[in-house]
Amino acid sequence: MSDNGATGANGNGSNGNGAAGGRRALALVPKADAPQKMKDFKTDQEVRWCPGCGDYAILAAVQSFLPELGLRRENITFVSGIGCSSRFPYYMNTYGFHSIHGRAPAIATGLASSRPDLSVWVVTGDGDALSIGGNHLIHALRRNVNLKILLFNNRIYGLTKGQYSPTSELGKITKSTPMGSLDAPFNPISLAIGAEGSFVARTIDSDRKHLQSVLRAAAEHQGTALVEIYQNCNIFNDGAFEPLKDASVRDDITVRLEHGEPIVFGSERQKALRRTPNGSFEVVNVADVDPSEIAVHDAHNPDPSQAFALSRLDSPAFEHTPIGIFRQVERPSYDELMSAQVEEAIRTQGKGDLAALLSSGDTWRVD
Image (cartoon, rainbow, N blue to C red; front, top):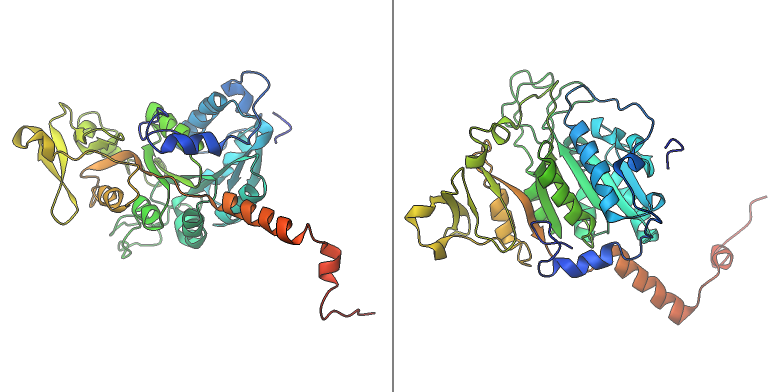
């Protein structure tokens, strides 16, 4: 700590199998002795991001929502890798670890597995998580470790001054791709669902109400929760998500997902999604279809195919972009399973003796 200082897909904590996970996820984390405020999670460190960076909005949203959880600050930990977003632990009055490039999920896995009394958060970016850290990310997701991953996606390398990233669009002209990127970009939501992530969501830096509702749901989820946050880099990739923020068009392209609700959107709720015979989704006019044809969002469906199909809607350029919780399912977390194995080993074999183990078998002394 700085010396200076279950929810449903709509974040209401009442839907289906998400509630049981919510009760387990934080059950072992000690509660604060007194009510907390946003200022309790601020440090006296100068926040060093470029003026206008979307990271400021995310930091404020996290600091203002954490008091709602009522957890002891000493039992909350933020682990980051390398990048602009990875300065996050300095600005949170909790324990934190500014680790090495791409390895934050691996470090957080060890922490969450050995300390079930902690609420463990990973803060990473599209370069840190999906390039050098891609391997660690997918294994954390498939293992379902009880940690929360905030993936700040600005579609650029900001800290190293504007090179293309794994989420940059095809043809993106940057300092490292002067004639345009040839790499097909990762879709972080599709990637997480493909890795069998049990909680996968997307939100936007400038929509605080939505951002906090998703964070709340992620915090209470038992297992790995990945939250992609569209974050504007106003220096090296300004306006990357402008269509989703432009009041004149955003309602017609933003698809807000709520578990158990028909997927209807548009400035006048005039559009909807319908499942096609091949399993994908298509946009239809509400007036042109029978209400029974309109897809109903089911974030708790164990089959990830519907969530994956939803994740493909934003291609090629935010034509229709879902935000909210794509997938929220219950399955055993890695730390629970590991703890059960350790308890069984102790029950059947005894506690063991580390010194005896190290000196057993073929050992010798070197003088």
